[in-house]
Image (cartoon, rainbow, N blue to C red; front, side):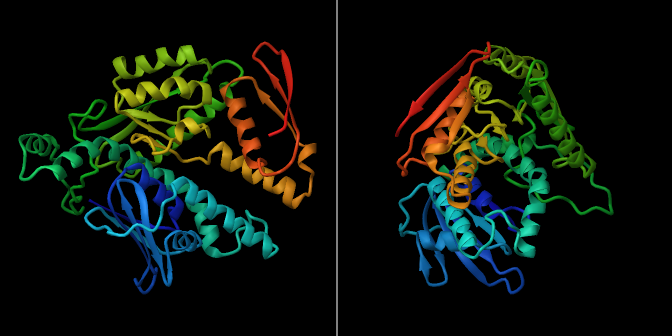
Length: 388
């Protein structure tokens, strides 16, 4: 199985995270965009980054240099690998450190960490609007195919199960003017729940009513717009994408019922764009227990970013820790605000706890005292003073 693309369209950090999430063994090679000369090589073993080379740099330093690239083409082959291991740090920690170094380098050069200084940076920024359309098809099909790929790679010959899987794939006539699509191991079998000859059905749990209804409605509109763009281009291997959104009112108890409705009644293939930290906390265990794709959840909580990564979870947004580290870096290092003058006002639930943990983590190396004021759903407030 091979994965290829352009890092001006899909940032290299996202590619590395996907390779880790799929837990595959292979080599990720980044080529020069014009000469096709190899620039960097990253070796994975069961989703763990074992080694990297970039010019004369090896190990973690090579990864940090590779993350600075804004142009180039990548290719991942699971048939290749490296017998050496020079990296003993998790992928998440490597990416966080790489982003921190990039920010510090830009600050030292007198630039804002978020300034788009080159055409490559601007292209990466624009591509983040288009990348979810391409990666949605990849990630949605990836989890469904991984099990069959593992079986095929662990036994010799062609098993009866593999033969039935190949026979179940639909064969649609192709117009004479259109080239026949290449068969991919990432194409979901037609026998999968929520996948027919003509469509793939995804589910979403979101607050479509109550105080947070605008978040849910806007998320639903965004996913439907993305699906519309994909369908206008012919869908995924000829199948249209359809979304079924169920209102949970931002209440975890209702989320459980919504998940059962989507799985048992609507028979969806996977979940996309589900929103809310406390509600995702109720939805995620159900999806994982059924081995169903959970793509693009609207939460930065750690429950979506475990180490090692959950096989069926695919993230698009940054984590709360990453977002708040950038906020604290700006407040303390750029604005020169003393840490002791920073207070946190947060919800008294899983969302608020995750945000507060992000602030304390970002400032843990400083000597400070933070005051947190939290509000519950009933409007009651609570203040706490914490000195890590």
